[in-house]
Each structure stands twice: as C-alpha cells, then as structure tokens.
Image (cartoon, rainbow, N blue to C red; front, side, top):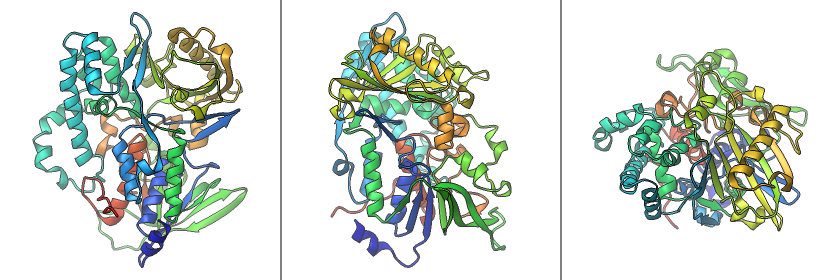
Length: 540
C-alpha cells in the first residue's frame, strides 16, 4: 500500500491537515492520502480513536465508547477503498442472541435472536399477529434503508438534481409521512405490546434522539439489528481503530498525537468570486500546541473532524464562523451519558454481550433527558455491554468486563467521573444507583461487592476530552430539522478549503456515518455530486 501511495503522490497534491483522530478524522486522512495528498493528522489526546478509545486497568481492557457493530457493508466499503477489506483487518463474529432486554416490571427478560425468522416467531409469541406485522415493518425498514443509502447518506447536498429520480419520486408521499411522523407513534400504530414498542423505538438513542422526536424514517435502524444482525470485532473496537490507523499510515498519513489545535489560520481571499459564494478567507495553516510548544503547520486544505461547535466558535474568529454561537442556541443536543467501566469478579450469566434495561414509563424517561426542564432519570433506561461473554481477551480469567451507558441530559453541570469513586459526587451517586439497578433488575444481588475495577465518566469529561458541545456523548440529535440537508454543510461558507467531517455534520452519528462523512470530503474535493458510495477499486 505504501508503494501505491508513492505512485499516487502526483502533481496537484495538496498539503492537508485533518483535525481530530476519531473515526471521522482517521477515515478522512486515510482516504485523502489515498487520493495522493500529503496529509497530517492532529489529535489532542495521546492516542487516536476519539469516542472509540480504549482504556486498560489491572488486566481489563475496555472500549470507551462505541460497542455495536452495525452497517458492516459501510465499514467494509471504507477498507475496500483503502485496498483491503474488513475481513482482512478484523475477526468478526455474529452475536446470537443479538441482545437481551430486561424490563422494569411485569415481564420476563427477552432475548432477541440473530435472524429474522426467529425474531418473527418471538414477536408472535409476545403479541398475536405481531409476527406477520413485523415482516411488513422490516420490509419497510429495509426499503427505507436502501433508498437512504442510495440517495441521502452519501450525498453532500451540493445539488438536488440527483434526488429527482424515479426511485425517489415514487416514494415521495411515503418519505414525507416517515419524516413528519415520530418513530414512537409509527410503532404504536402497528404494535400494541409495550415490549415490542420499546425494542423497535430504542434505536433512536443510537442517533442521539428520542423515539418521541426522531422521524419514523429512522425505523430503518431495525433493519440493521433485526435483519442484518449484530457483529463484534474480536479484541474489541480498539482493533477497528488500530486497523484504521494502520491503513492510514500505510497510505502516508503522518499522525501527531498530543497535539491540541488552538486555531485555524486564514488569509483574506482574492475578490472577484461569485456573489453567491460568501467565502471571504481561505485556510493557510493550523496552529497547535504540544508539550508546551506552539507550532504552525501550513495547509492548502483543512478538514476538522473535531466537534463542529468547538471548531467554529473556538478555532475561528467570529467574522469567519458559518455556525456561530447564536446558531447553536437553536440546536438540539443529543444526550450526554454516564459511562461506567467495571471489572467484576466471577461470572455474570444474567447479562448477555448486549443487554438493555427498559423502564416502564418510557415517555417520562425520555422527557427528563430531552424536555425543556431536564433531570437525570431514576430509574433510567440503560445499556450494558459484557464483551467478555464473547471475548476472553478483555478481562482476566475468572472475571467479567462490563461497560454501562446511561443516557442523561447534555449538562456539564452534572460533573465528571473518575477512578474508584474519584469523580464528582453527583456522578458517583448516580453510578451507585445504576449499579444497584442492574443488580436488582438482572438478579445479581452481590454485584457491587464483586466490582474490583471501577471508573466513571460524565458529561464534563466529554467536554474536556472531546470538546463536545454541551457535553453531548454523540453530537446534535437526529431530529427532522437536524437530519440530512438540515444538518448543516460539511464545507465552511466563509473560509475556502475548510471542510468538516465526523458526527457533528452530514450524514450524522455513529461509526458508519462518520466513515461516510470522510467519503463526502473526497466527493467535495472531486466535485462529485452523486448520491451513492464512491466506486470501489477493481479487484487485483
């Protein structure tokens, strides 16, 4: 791959600086180096990965963020563009059951199996007629997913002409309905059992939203976990980061960690451009600080895969901000989260690899997170990951690795976490309550006594470590006015050759979306206004 890179470094190659070494930044730097550009990646932390980081303690290795491997074809497509494949880079296993759901009261736990036929039988056992209805629901979800992938997810929205296609036009009435109707009401019209409603509504959280606010277009998420199933990369999601770093450096990317960017530097732009173009400056350099030393690196192109609010309001002067503070005052943040990393002595068969705990009062739970007057839900609907159920490498023998995510309001005032109860009191008290809730609901009465490693992580940590707007754990929520072309451009309107990637911009939140955001940068620079994925290189 290095040889290929050197052959492609050609006349017209640009000096590119990518800010942020998370999924979006790694993918962007790799693809642009593959295009033949000279790319430097600047990452604030000592390791790349961003939200998809890794932490080790006493023989435990924790993924610090993403833990659901969905849309595998998007991940494989990225690696194929880099001249390899996911199969070559990762050892993927299919989880069966895909996940377990534990309800607050009145119902037994439900294991959601890994294939559509089994899920259909499960739903029929929960509600008469729900099996046949689920088949229709998943057919609709698959159709929505395929049209989204073909026409919307890979679009930079520079031109709307590609949307005037027969496959879009014939679906316009249905697309309109799916965009205007909330996911929760869409599900309620088709299923009466509250357990089914929750299973089909909860994926909105993966999009940083609530089933009461997310458009029902996002019922396509059920196609991903109930049709396609859930995979897991052995060794954890850190192996995905390692693979992405590997292909990036092999393509020629220079990665500088511990490099905290302090400004995107510009020159005044030559007048005479189109009056429709409001760009008044162009990038010339990026200034960053590392180990007490300030350095400036020249750049023909800058791509910020850092938090968009931070990029715009901190790294640029006010007169060059496309999205100034007043813009953000009208935006809706996704949730923040309490994260717990727990090393537990002994086995935990009560928990699957993925386990969801759902409260009975669904509306109250989400209202506390997303309402005008927010508060931390108690008890809370939450998610538990036990990767040691599948992977022996993430915990010492005789122990379990447990990761807990509790969606909470995006409020840095809740505080920050720490190691062994070293976080702020409000965060640690919430952590105690959550451990108690899991203990009671899952039937693990001695859970707290068996914890040998404990680390908490709160909204202030997201702000400090990731420069996350309002301490969000994911980014701006995927409500209608913050989805697709409403989400905001991946190009600065005021600074030439400044672009954006990652979860803050199009197409949105999650590992696959961040990979696609990187591809959209390539399309921007190529002037490609098509709506599908980039063509893959010919085999061989």
